[in-house]
Length: 296
Length: 330
Image (cartoon, rainbow over all chains, first blue to last red; front, side, top):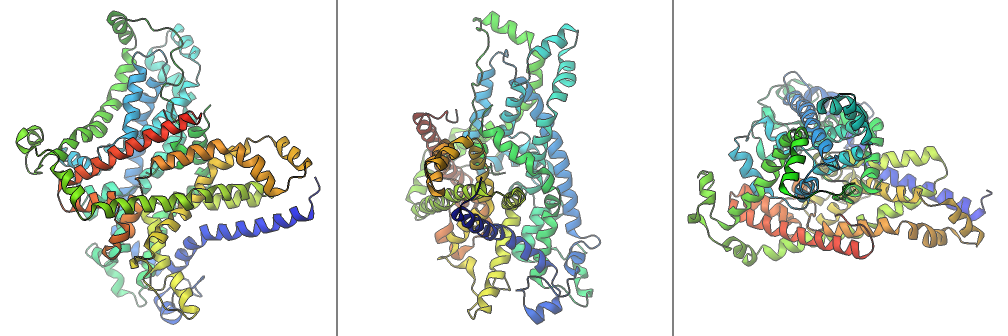
């Protein structure tokens, strides 16, 4: 199809507009990255309105990730949270999704309603806090895991996926003498791997990014995940963590990084793993939106 | 984690009704339960999760009608001695904060809707017109990126942009001869910052659903429109927008249904006492007065007020969706 002059003009305008829009999404993060590389000396000379530092330095990163730093510790906590939270999340979500996908199940609809209602109505902040307190989970790693075991929405997406697996497969396996457990593990589990992988990724990113539970349930800095250390540094600077060595070594540096660079570096450190896997996982999330919206 | 907008759209609880007629009677029910005992055993532990972590807090809402003392045991929660009726609700409605936090909640939500709703549609229209696939993919990938930042990271980026100590915006202002400003503590600007940040973080992501809907439009419709001499804007107006109207309507309705969630985590991470007057929403008030201030019963009462209102709003939104011929949420 030959384009008219007007259409060609529009194409150029459109590309121009979208380039500006893309910069709007990208530049804030890029400027944080460049700020994280600014040295104290350069800051004193030029201020921070620096799109790229003349002499990028990794002082901020060295300081934050130094030996015995609280940031390293927080990385371990977050990693543990992601691994344990995702595994347990799937171990709890998959069987229930499987059960709810059985059309013959007695009381299937009431059980589904029982779960669905929790998406519409919550106890809210205070009763949840009281519950965690009464369960003795305050200041415990498990306060970040147990309340998030099952995301009801993702559970129902997984169920919808399994509803599409033909029931004849189960009947055939049972005819061949398979027990219900074998049917689950040998027939349905392999067939559900795509949805398990997708929802596993959602749990993993959720656990990496979530912070508010730890903010109210956990006090001990040694047990805080990365997001909370980031929050602490953003709002009160690095001084508060100076007891946890690593950061204390700042005084030994000849050219200590400016506070703003430290904050920026901490933002980059916190989000780097997400950025690195982002190009590969993006489509799983986009696919999820389709699963949830355009019904099959 | 915040649910992506598109994911909030549809769950059909009664999807695919039983393929065979259920027999009735207790004996028949028992027979079926025994037959599927493996399935019930499998479901038991996950369902226990819902009982403990989702329903117990709902039962815990009774402290909203008591003078709950955190140092007493669980028994105190069920004793009539502490029962005070609707005292906390009355205190809340009478308090000087009530109208302010309700207004802030609704106003911030409204602004987020006003900008955050049409912009993804416009973005999707523009992205959809791009003929260079590589450019199209790049724009999409970058526009989704902020959605994957945690709220702490996103708020950190906003702080870094706005700080008077060399934030990008202030440095630009100074470079052009202006004076550095403390944007985040300025009550006149705080809501604009919150809304802009919301657009920055979610607009790209929220455009996905519209792009998906546009991808299902039959290209022949565009060809026919072009044949009739429709220009670009006429094609948008007469073909594209009507074709995706179902997505537009349903997302609009459910955004209105979620109106009382004005962005708790976001505001909590960015506000400060100097901007409480324009930024304090119901959720942040519950957090400060109830949790930090240790008035558990009062906080639970305010939270219950919000939960009930939100449930009613969502119910009405669903009714409207059904009335408009959509399937609704349930």
